[in-house]
Amino acid sequence: MSKSSKRWLREHNRDQFVNQARRSQLRSRAVFKLEEIDQRHKLFQPGQIVVDLGATPGSWSGYASKKVGPAGKVIAIDLLEMQPVENVTFLQGDITDEQLLQQCIAELNNAEAALVISDMAPNLSGIAVTDQANSLYLAETARDLAFSVLENGGHLLVKLFQGSDSDTFRKGLKKQFQKVTLHKPRASQANSSEIYVLAKGYNA
Ligand SMILES: C[S@@+](CC[C@H](N)C(=O)[O-])C[C@H]1O[C@@H](n2cnc3c(N)ncnc32)[C@H](O)[C@@H]1O
Image (cartoon, rainbow, N blue to C red):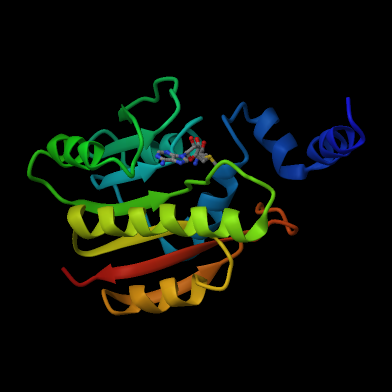
């Protein structure tokens, strides 16, 4: 094992959120980020329809499913396969593919979503500007999908790697949503450039 892999493994094992996720048998530590933002902003309500982008391995979907309950619905999308989650409809494919957007709309069956959440992350190249550009592209795709599926007053939560264009992205959202805020949850690694943009109150 290389030195950097050993260092990653050491840090990973020391991470309180990784250990908490293992103890609770959760699919990933990512759920703590969503939970923290939800506790502050009360994103979920029973009966809602939620679209979860970049859903595998499924911890956000599991959280969303519990929150919306049996009267709600979660549509989860990812490039990678996901093990089934109760009350979650999974679509496998690339969200940048128009066909997948159409599949998502068909799955909504003329209803609109109250919430679009995206934890999508690109494959990392290690070159910051490239990773930021790829992350921005995924965030823009999530935003465009939100414009197609959100109900009036709905919310969008989207992960973004901070870079020179992040502010333009945030400002752009202000035209379509009532309030846009940035979040760096405690469970997000301090050395990661990821932030979460929360856009509340979609003006359809
Ligand atoms: C950080 S993981 C998501 C973790 C998930 N939120 C959870 O709680 O388990 C990011 C995911 O984004 C997915 N992803 C990246 N690009 C995508 C794309 N173009 N279309 C769909 N999913 C994508 C990856 O396959 C990966 O599973």
